[in-house]
Length: 103
Image (tube, rainbow, N blue to C red; front, side):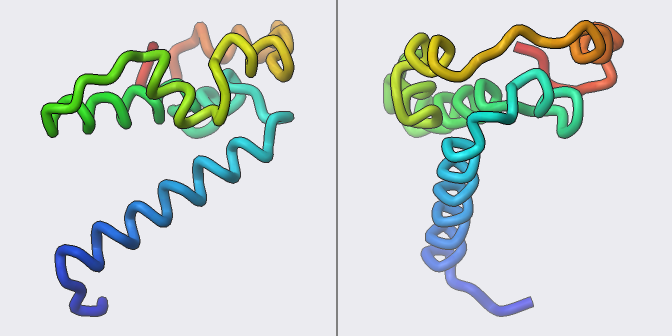
């Protein structure tokens, strides 16, 4: 493992976060429930983690503000444009609770 300075590590982690955020923004076909069922987290989880990190640093941020950062637009707009009704199978898998973080 390379010997990274704290600043280098933070910069690389931030770049990885931005790439994940951008990837999820491009993959609007992937629904949050599918992410939850397969990976145990979704865009909402990511926005919650972002907000929690901001608050831990003393930065006040609302849920809507952090969601707009992750979604690249207001959450309600994203839902209207891209969210589909979950299939009965996806709903059943979600209800079974095989995932970790619930929101």
